[in-house]
Length: 119
Image (cartoon, rainbow, N blue to C red):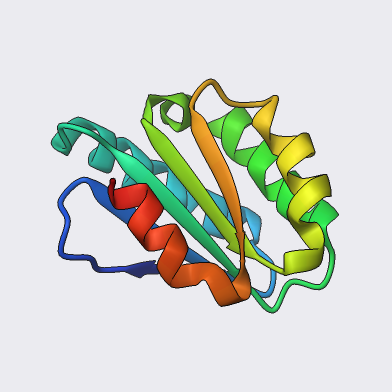
């Protein structure tokens, strides 16, 4: 399931993935990404992964987004927030798929992630 989280910044889009994202969720995310890129002067994206047990499911989601959304590389910064144990693997797996400033933060670092992405 996905949840779009409202923020004070018009440049920041926060998407929370709860458990796993389905094909329908991917379909819902695509127009949201496109709209944000079009309407923002400096689009930034933060994904918060909650309840996912395996980092490879995050990589699958990311791969599906890249295959289905040309807007992913239009973001100037992307923050990924998830299990601390995913940090090394997930960063290596995803950063090669995007041409943007990408950083991973553990669950306990969500405020640090928000500060970094809004810099």
